[in-house]
Length: 447
Image (cartoon, rainbow, N blue to C red; front, side, top):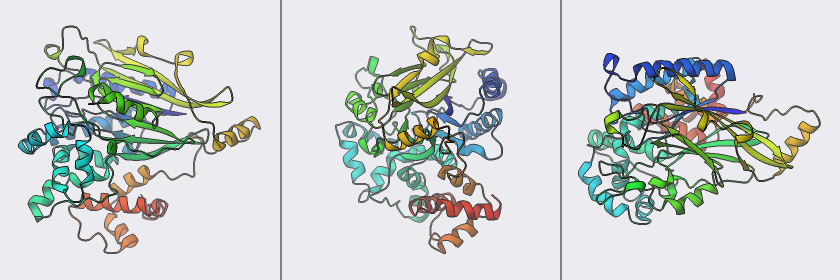
């Protein structure tokens, strides 16, 4: 089994202490997830589906880091176990005053079909245009990189203003640079499970609209194929994290069919209302942990803080593998968190999607039927070296310079600032298949 804690839309503002209207709710949330941890057991991963901040400032992310640390402590994570936290950005995770005029000129043309795809395809020859779209997320990516939730393009674009202003150099992109991040997070009945995340807010601004009430002058978001173009195989499970659901994406119906064929499980934020469904794939739309104030709500909408505990397991259904997704939803009633009965879907009501039958599944099931151990199950696995754990350990090591020099000599000396150097090094290690070697070095240095 793999168990997630899913939250979204925390909307950290600059309010703190007695000015924070949600301080009591957040305190009770931490108490409630601690109880869930004690009752259910280990929570393997924390997923944050966007809008961590309210306006993308360093101060807001500083507050968010402390809250994430509190979450980790509440569910039994020790030390620097932030390697078990993953996130994607939302429309509130950008500073809208960065490259405002340039982005406004780009916005309308990029809403046309395949326009963003064409722009991103030219990233090698025209890096500045691509980096301008990512630059407003610089503060977000400074934090997200520490949790290894950062794509190749975001990693380079996050230092774009620094490289432009400080050294006169413009960030260089490579043809193989990806718009999404991917991490292997476990195995279920012999089937590898990989988590992916991407940015749906590249064109977000003050003129964002909603599909249910799109008025003149407002616009939906864009999601180019490069942002989710993951190559998948039938003997794998793939999970996608996005902030905006397909209803808020231009040509979302068309994109949804493509995504459903790649990702058996999808997590979304943004809508502020909890819901889940299964139609070709399991989709979980998280409610907001910190919803809008009463005066910001529509008359017909009622928002309240919500979070989810989600359990994944692969079961034998008529001789075929089936991904079973149990959703335990919890809502705030103004005093405490309690079961959100309407949205809790477990047992016979759990969400299910059939998987393709494959040799790995057959061999695992044969071992189970014979009473043999299944060492590739997530709960029992001990030998697999997960890249995100190694990368997080390196980022918190005090021997980074020595390790880089030991593995690659002076190859990274020209890269600055240091955080870009470290992330570039980790990308090289992963591409070269040297994660296990890095893990062994970290052990030797006492990670």
